[in-house]
Image (cartoon, rainbow, N blue to C red; front, side, top):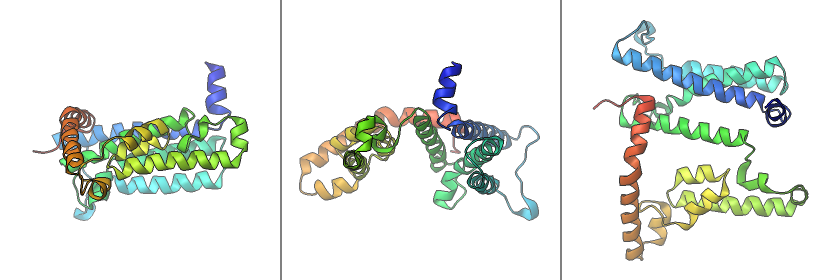
Length: 245
């Protein structure tokens, strides 16, 4: 275990990334626990409203991200300073992404259905950082052999092909598959070859004169949403709390 830890985390310089991920997840979970207690009127916690101005926790989150980011840039990738910067940055990211929906809508939608978008973004971010920790690099570069990596044409071709897969998945309205596919090309390929979502840019452009394809896309999207949207919403509500009715 110690050999694995040194070979996969310490030697490649991934310890700061691991610290940032751990502090990010912990900050998000603690923040959600506190906000749910405030919402329920339990415990000693209260909203911070100096002078009647409600200060959202995205504000200290931005401050911590700025401080942690500049410390990381000013220092090196190893040592106490690097670890401290990673922790500060991770906590800041946790606070900011917990209110991602507020930033997206420029409105306090924390306890609404739109607010669950924050939980979805947090889950996706954790998954992507975990992939990087596991050795995945964007667009399948990690799958190249040392000889192939030395050939620039091979690297460019691999990145270009996998980028096209991710772009096609995005154009077909499958943003989650496209984002994950940046690090796992097979996921992007799966999204690229499947039918597009009915309201995606691809469907509006390519299914305009293909009513049968558009009808199939609508049926498939309906079945997919009926099967998975309810489960995803339950998981998001379990983690972040159910929105107001």
